[in-house]
Image (cartoon, rainbow, N blue to C red; front, top):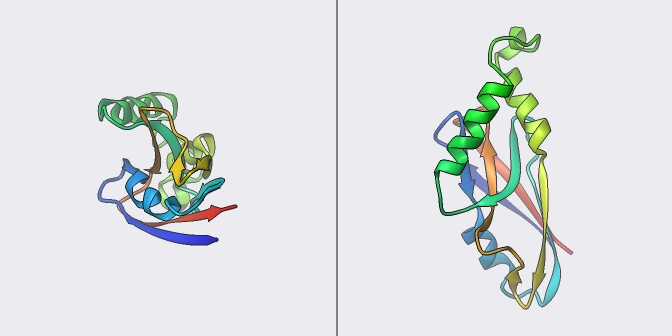
Length: 129
């Protein structure tokens, strides 16, 4: 089964918790694997802490130090080279096991779309096997 989720971001850098949308989709699945994938080169999918918003700020601050804006060849094209580099490091997908209709996530874990070049409307493709 393949489903598509649309996510509108509001900021240049943003993490959007996808858990609530996904839980509804998997509640009838006895056992399986969920793959989350975003078909964008300036966004990513991660699993990270879901309760402290400082985590996302820390991640974006870290990336800002490691990958400074305005120093890359691709910036001459559309001024978003850092978004491409960051998305490449984070990756476009995550996999989560499902058992008895539940995502087998840790207590503080949530799957998130990471926006690196917003605001935009993004696609997240969900495949259950």
